[in-house]
Amino acid sequence: MIKTIEKCMQIVIGIYNKFDASHDFAHIQRVMKNAEEILVREPSANEEVVRLAVLLHDIEDAKYKSDDNPSILDILQEIGLEDELTKKVVACIESVSFSGGNAKDITSIDGAIVRDADRLDAIGAIGIARTFAFGGARGRKLYDTDEMVRVNMSETEYRSKETASVTHFYEKLLLLKELMVTEEGKRLAEQRHDYMEGFLKQLDREIGS
Image (cartoon, rainbow, N blue to C red; front, side, top):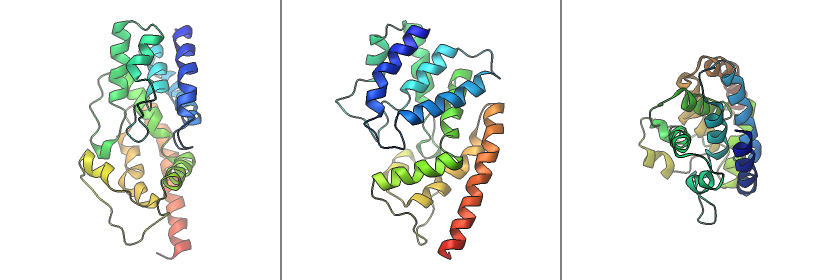
């Protein structure tokens, strides 16, 4: 297990560090830390599958996908992962994305851990920082008090509009606490969610909305 994870890490570091600060390798490291905390409470999970899925989960993210980068399957083949484990890793990754609330169903505890670990990094203080880092990289407004918050979106609708960064809190981040799957994920999400709510209240006071 250690060899496959180390090989995978060496391949992906350079790829992620070409992304902006919201999805760089530091993000992967934080998601891994979250996954490790949840793994302690989920002894039936396959640690190798979870760790590889964390390392690879943003490689083919539509926001960053490039023909210059290897695919998830290319990397798993390069590190010599057996077919059965490859299928499990891919299944985990496919269920991670929020996609406007249209995420695929969780099919294993491994997938639940990876999804919760990734979503924990989207909320709280680091979630706030990442939201504005991504918005700044894409030239988005900090906020737009006239912008309508969208609900019940298709994945295409969710990705088609470049909303202000604060709008993203209401369209995604504030929804994540209730979408956590593991008990530890739910517990860890509580304080982070409350922190975001406090931030948004303070922001409202400062901008007078």
